[in-house]
Amino acid sequence: MKFTSELTYDSAAIIQDLTWEHLTSLFESSPPSHIIDFGCGTGKKCRALSMHYPHSNITGIDHSESMIAYAKKHHSGENIEYKCRRSEEHTSELQSPDHLVC
Image (cartoon, rainbow, N blue to C red):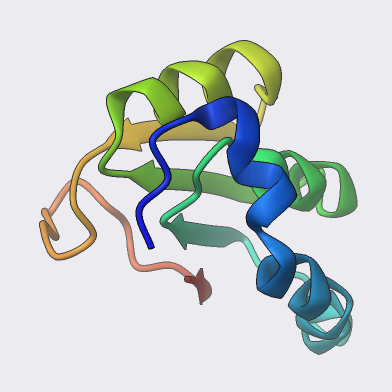
């Protein structure tokens, strides 16, 4: 399913919401230093990760320029960086993360 509006994306992101608590419980024993969220959409989860792990670097990646623009405007943070690219476009500029969120 393709979402064309950053305004309705979060209301349809049910699976992401359901996995959020389980995901963060997995990180509790060893807080990550770097997390990459592929398909970050509006950045809502990046912001939540940023608040939960204030000393971690969070990189949000999405192929939609409008989603990244929305994320930067509404869900930015000191330890969050957003990039517009397709998830298969790995580049050397992305450091090896401790965790990947998809």
